[in-house]
Length: 62
View: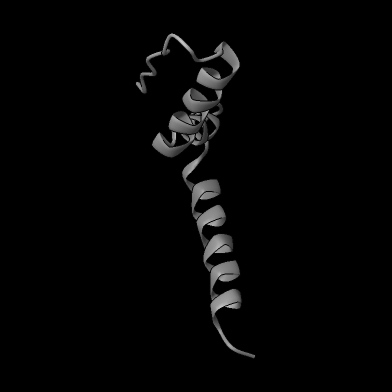
């Protein structure tokens, strides 16, 4: 879990912004969204195939 130490001359909003940035870098929110609902293995396979297609379409020169 990311930890943020609030300095004496720092506002709460600034510390909250740093905490959110650390959480984003750690990938906590994306992991939470991914595990919010159960995903069947067939749905997972379909999602990964679509992601690979999108990635291939972007990297491939036309």
